[in-house]
Length: 431
Ligand code: IMP
Image 1 (cartoon, rainbow, N blue to C red):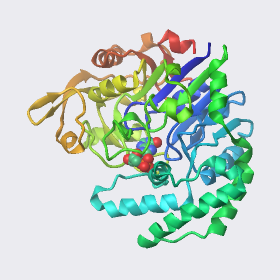
Image 2 (image 1 turned 135 degrees about the vertical axis):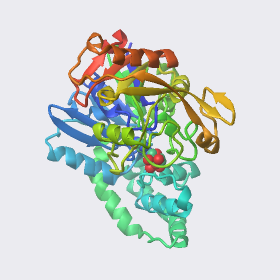
Image 3 (image 1 turned 180 degrees about the vertical axis):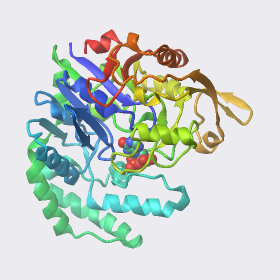
Image 4 (image 1 turned 120 degrees about the horizontal axis):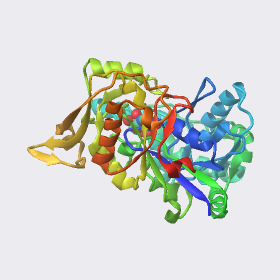
């Protein structure tokens, strides 16, 4: 029987999924991305080098690993080609990459529209990455979108492009934006097809074949984080897909029964980029200290990330929704040196004590975190390689997170490098 592992972000994205996926990708036969697009920014570090990936799965550094961009993604061929070029420039040329013929295709107008919709919202803007993610998903569900597989059939692609441009140019005109010329777009996308056409295939068939084989290890790599989930996150300050484990069956084209091992990646504190309520947010010197130490600046946009304490309300909620089996507790070393560390155990809102996030952001914005204070630790733990070597105060912090969430911490990360990873869970050790 194949072995599966789903790695998801359990907060607001940027939890360190790239590192964890890369850590398991070394042993995985297949790595599958199933939602989102080049709004993601996954940082992978090894052998003293640092790489940043946007839409390409994190298993691309291992020549034996099959990398799949699933049907649930929104794929920008221009950006895929640019990302591949960057990898080539740094000597990463030996990889296996397949792109779903059913994946929604990001077109040039989607980022223009993303920017225009944000501008229209004024003070209520979402703070999107302006990569056209939302507009591409909107077109997919409005059934006027183009798909990656269309590129393999130039006549059909031309037909779909004409139909889309009729609608989109009208919208662009109304918004005072530049309209697109059929021939220019057609020629450019056919050029891109020449570069990625050989990677386009029915990836669901590929994944299902691997799932059914007895000795394959398959990793599903989530992007963003569950609090950015369009259904369960801090709507409308969310992304347009489902970063949860429940996004896997639809976004990869596999049956739900295959989803049985979910690793929730969580920072030892919390961060958020973009707008939207963030109950444990810190505004003082400690935020600055954590931000600098954790290099908390967006991989895609370079924006400084907002910083706050670990939120067990969020962790319980995402743990429940995604059926998280283990936590991967990331950037634990960043908390070293603080006198006290805090964990949020509940929210106080309108005289009530809440154990889960409310559905509206107006209510969430009124939530005050109920914090417990714990002893900090002074020791630099970036060289620690086993749980037993951790300072007692750091162990107590880990145990408190397990107690508050009811989910064991299976991995502790104490630095960006592959080697700075403490795997506690036997199941994860054996993956
Ligand atoms: P969009 O996905 O570009 O539409 O942006 C919607 C929201 O999701 C914004 O708040 C973004 O900052 C956030 N977001 C999108 N992708 C990521 C990511 O990979 N990490 C963190 N936040 C993200």
